[in-house]
Image 1 (tube, rainbow, N blue to C red):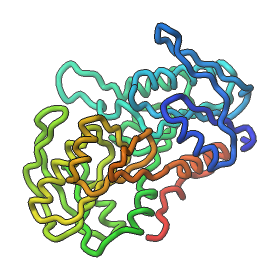
Image 2: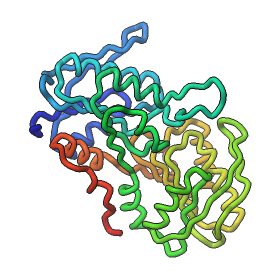
Image 3: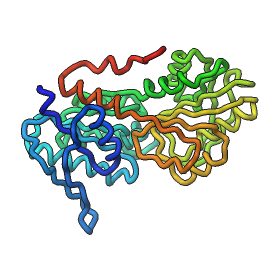
Image 4: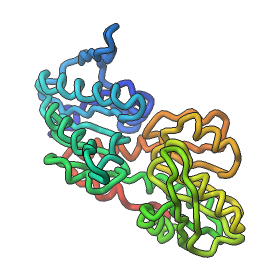
Length: 315
């Protein structure tokens, strides 16, 4: 397939990222109208010819999640009916990913439902980043290219790492990610055990590993209220930790999260632009994944391997 047949479109969730992706690969962002009728229904019109083209639709399903998911589904359907040759749904952030199993009676597996909806709408493949659960790739019967934001984090952290660094997971589930960061950065490994009280409140109950007098890097894939991060940071401070930073792929920050970050318990929150984020003058560093996603789009377009995108520079 010729690279000249490449077209990139965007919904309303993160148009700035889509524009950055297009700049990184030297193609214009496709023209599309994505609006709402007065009753709230989404209207989509692709404003240029895409017959026989390789179409990529960039849309994070971040808040308002349902609105952005519906926009994506309708854009895929519009592209399919406009005779696009191949349609790739590019979800820098895959919403509903935490609803990936039946952990209590009579609940849905919404991550699987979203996968079904994307395929039914007409997506031929999916490009996403840092899924909350690896098994979500298996929810699809179409190819899924799963990228990691870690190369972008490592490039930044490599310039600011210290000799006494300890990488900590703020909960048991993140140990594998923390171990990978510790290995790459040549750091020690630790963990904070937590107890969740409710949807917005977390209690840290113990620390595994030596953290006294050390700089800490907390790693996680997603945060909304920053409850897990700040609870972990608080107990680490009690155990004698010095500078505490957090690296989180997707920050869907609400007002509670901003208040917790403002308290200063975390010295720096490092995240990516997979979703729009307002730093509000707080110690939040936003790294761009546009180049990584752009390279993946180019390689998918030319049917090349994307394996090289997982290689870390400078380590």
